[in-house]
Length: 124
Image: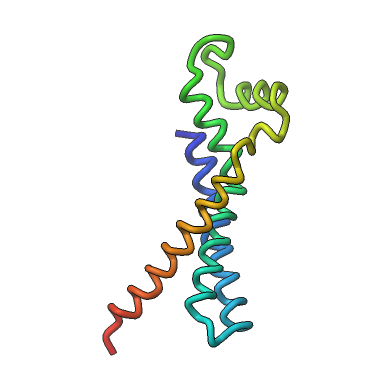
């Protein structure tokens, strides 16, 4: 539970903060390209989530898989220290490139769908 919260709270802060901030910037810079601005802001928001959340996700996934063996029943902080000593900082970001590519595409589509749905559902 704690590793999941360590991933989700800062990750979602980065996700929505990046989306909101870039959405406003892109729409002020490119007012004629509202949908493109939404796509770009959503994509970068998704990437921001995983740049922040990847280390916690790596720890969470490894703790779930490696419950025995040389790691035994380590607590979160001991496991983090051991993982860092064995893998370094880069170990926390192993596999990040495909994650970022997927996140950009998926979240660009997500936010465009949300924003366009809000327009369709708004009755004036």
